[in-house]
Image 1: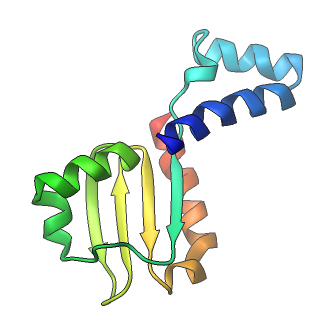
Image 2 (image 1 turned 180 degrees about the horizontal axis):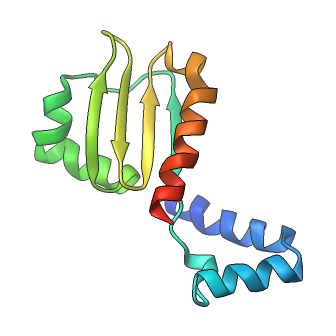
Length: 119
């Protein structure tokens, strides 16, 4: 629920920062629904609990339901080490583990490509 509120609030904040020309362009591109447009998010976390096998995140109905709320349809899961995991969905990426923060720049660049793909 917090993530949904954050996405909604971020649209309003950005709308306040846009010039009139930018606002008109956004409304034209998103057909009057710019405040409700889909966004792509990156969640960086120190850990994920429970950390389990990738197959469990993809196949266990309990994990799938919870992950779907954050990332949309789960597309892939990669357990990079005994502590690090990356979960990619249609609306977000979760990168969890102590070594994931070292790659935040790379993840942010990849996230931009994913967001463009959604556009």
